Image (cartoon, rainbow, N blue to C red):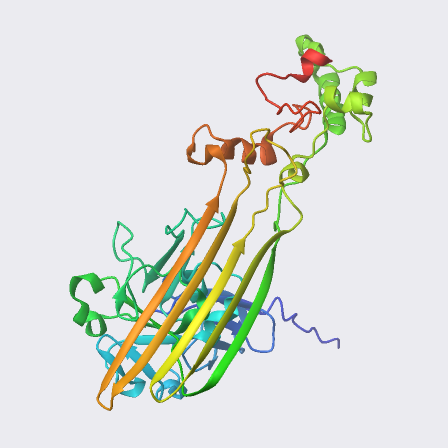
Length: 436
């Protein structure tokens, strides 16, 4: 008698569940994977997950700062999984609102990340973005991919600690070495550690300003010993992940003629829109210089976007010290490029492309004046420049609107981006029908 084996795919069932911590609070972004398989998912903003798995299988659940847990499904279709904080971090020293102390003695909910973990993000110009995925309970949302965000000193990255708590998008209090200031213009190489205070017991010392959580940034300082000089450089390539495929002018007109031929018996007036084949042939690629301007066949995606956008980040720092003074100094440069082509001249004498450049400097000094008296001095600053085009602010009728419309909806035969005499193409002032 032949024996029928059930396919592992058919034996899978939809498993749902929720992941929490020891305080029964949901964990956002926890990794949930099927042991022995490549299937996996992450928990949503409610700590919930859903995936297909065999009823006799096992799920592996992990999250930054917590111990990884393997759970047997045991025929259940709904699970509640609780993760314990990793005991390896209990002896770490964390920054709190009134100094530092060992993590094992902290009552409030505080998480911390180091410079090594922050630098893994690589290539980010906004320090806020380097927090992504590094701290449990901390969510970052980037609202635009434009270089430099909304502008100098205006980050496009929002931080939410344990979710969004107010309708007006309240952001956490940010302190840099104990002083309230913005964090997006701080270079990641200047940072020693970042602590996030999440609950009321941890943020109480800050009063109402800490209602949405508190982020404490500690910058690097000098050490005893000879001067140590370090230099780092990284470059990042940006590529468009996916764009819709579109027909060129030649094939578009062929399909249009075919549609007219099929409907002309029912709608005789459509014959007026029929394009003769000898005209259609003029749209074929390659074209002569004359036909290229009269019968455009533009690939708007190639015309507007580069194949690769480049960003650079370079930094150099020095640290050292003696019994009297310890010092740390750093200097860094960031350039964030865009994906738009810059091979067109606007004939105005200025660069209309998008770009962001920033220079950072920092000098932290610690003087031991007497055995019981220390004097600390922090000097820091930045200079940044954001380049954009003239119509940046015109959201309703500005350049940006027509750039994106061109990629998704502008006909290939409407006009050229720029003509040989320097004129810019215009949908209103140039019509291919007038030149047919």
